[in-house]
Amino acid sequence: MFYVYVIKSESSGKIYIGQSNDLDLRFKRHNGKLPAKSGSYTKINKGPWKLVYKEEYATREDAVIREKYLKSHRGRDWLKLMKVR
Image (cartoon, rainbow, N blue to C red):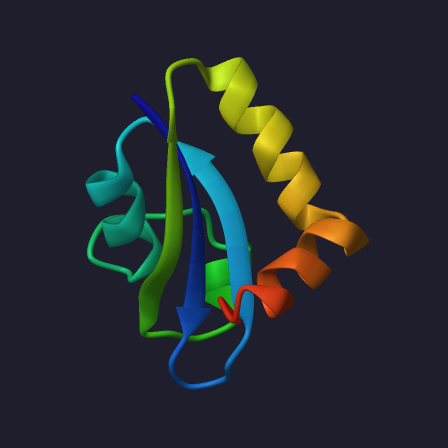
């Protein structure tokens, strides 16, 4: 399974939209429990990060398409409408 997810910083209120096939591992990287890139968005914008939304997909291709949509202006508007943010 592949996941598209939205996490929110509890300290700043910023959101991050991503996709992964291992949500637990990815979430640990976002929260600094495992090494992450020094310039990554979630490292620069402090957490702690909490999972606020996720969707499951059978293929990475489908997950990437949905991730791109959610990162678009229309997708962010949809997230607001769904009260994810």
